[in-house]
Image (cartoon, rainbow, N blue to C red; front, side, top):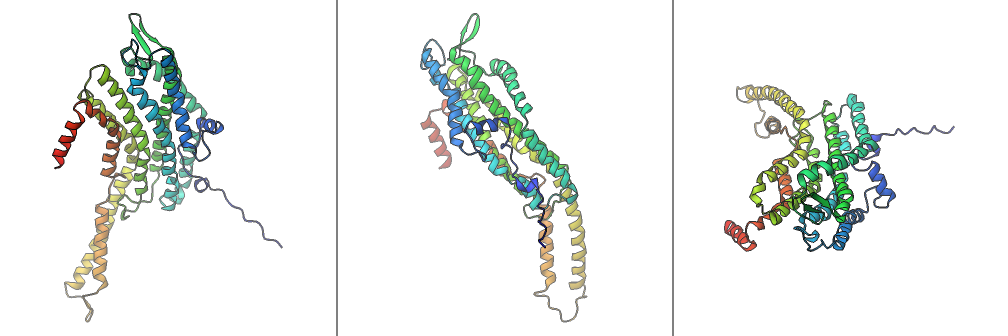
Length: 402
């Protein structure tokens, strides 16, 4: 008699990787356009095609209108710093970020399972959190709403009223009747800029999915270990996820650098005038990336308090027994002090208690905070040259070092 075939149960948590980017109508459109595959390959092709779609028509139309290098305008196309930082720097970084985020975050769900942080009784809630994140990532209405938001708010309100520079440029000429879009300005306003803003908003939406997933997992009573050597109860793998978002921070820094450069070169502003803007952007983006991990702070703080109490009680019992045995004359006759297991156990107990005492309630390090802040501000570093010549700057740096 033939044995019955074994039934293999499909486990969605183990059979597929967690991903914020492998899904959604835009991802499917890129696949059908042969600009991506199922594993986010063809990254360079996507970067080049999307960047040129936004930038090249603007160059051609500006050249046809005589606004590429000169003309009766303040900012010609080829001298517009924002064009380079937005379409030739920020867009490639946002596209590159998809692959990096996917590779860095793909094993997050497996880590929760392999480290046995999820109690068996909470597995249905954990599975529901993962499936909910996938549904939101693949949502067609969500991306349609992003498109509508970009055109209704991003272009008509935010860009035209708060971002567009108030001088004659290659995309809009100023007159007594108001601003009038050029041909290049029409492509810029209705194709290039909306596409760029959609890529940005899509990343904000993905960050929302990430925050929501972490918050749902943090509502589960995780099996954290206060004596775990990573000093965060076994959640150290989450601290490494923040570095996946570095390209997104660089893109934002480059975008602000281009915006400030135009105002410094063509409006007469100075870099110190924007010190508050730079600080606010750096602080906001750093909090945007690190903030989601703080949802685990209450559980980590509770685990630390519980660990200190339990290990403190255990240590008290042990050291009192040790004291009575070796210092109060109750040691058995002939038992040697040197080489005794009691000494080693006391040392192990002390080391365990020190680990619990050093446990952090924030699952990231000070280095991560400084690194992310530096990455965000890095694209604005060249603007320092608008305040002093390069030779003078180098002399001051060398004087500080030597």
